[in-house]
Structure formats: structure tokens, C-alpha cells
Amino acid sequence: MRSYSMGRAARLLGVSADTVRRWADAGRLPTRRDDGGRRLVAGEDLAAFAAALAAADTDDAAGGDGGEGGSHTSVRNAFPGIITAVKLGDVAAQIELQAGPHRLVSLLTREAVEELGLAVGMEAVARVKATNVHVDRV
Image (cartoon, rainbow, N blue to C red; front, side, top):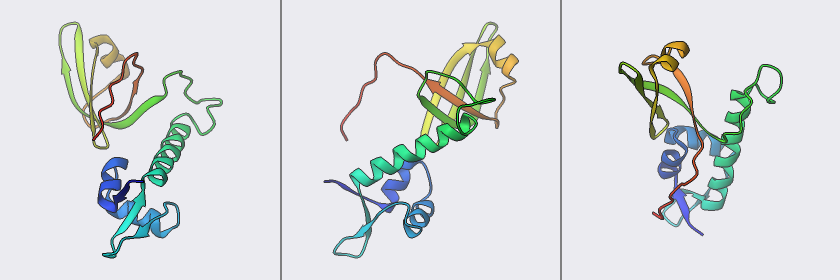
């Protein structure tokens, strides 16, 4: 089974290495030490933790339980982040969002951008629903 350093785990989770260390110190993320004394996270443990973290973020974004006042959507790929660029055309617009280590670009109507009041520096959630997703082995 593959293991990840604290730094690599942090990059994969989109947080700082200090955050990963705090989670490990608090017992939220299991780690072990290699022969050189470095802390490592087992791949299966990291995957389970990432899924649990994403589920908690989705619950928070949906009002906790998806109940009254929460978000109701069939789109499961949600990327909360901050808007880093807004390019307005006459009819269309382009929004760039930085969600952790991921840069997402969305094309939408100018009218939608104006109705939502989207601007650089605002928090937003990019929701992605695709019929075709490619996965490359690293």
C-alpha cells in the first residue's frame, strides 16, 4: 500500500502541512513513522479522511443536514473556493475560482454573473457535473 508524507497529504487535501500535523496530533488522521522518523499517512487512511472531510464540507454548505434553508442539488462534485478573476463580455462571462490547489474556469452568461453579484475576492462554490471524466495515474 502506498504511503504519503505529511507535505504530500497536505497538497492532496488542499491545506497546509501544519493543518495535517494538527489533525494527526488530534488523532483524526492516523499516521506512522518510517525508519527515518518521518510521519507517513497510509493511502487508504488518507482516502477515507479526504472523503469524510469532503462530506463534512458538503453538509456545511448545505446547511448541515440539507434541510430547510439548505442547498438541494444532484451535483455531487462541489469545490468551495474564492473567485480570482471575472471577465465580462457583451453576452458571456468567464469566472476563475481557486479551490484549494485547483483552478476552475467557468463560462456563463453575463446576466448570471450580474444577478449573482460575482466579483473577485468573493467566496463561491463551483459545482461540476460531467458525463466524461479522465483519470491519469500519477
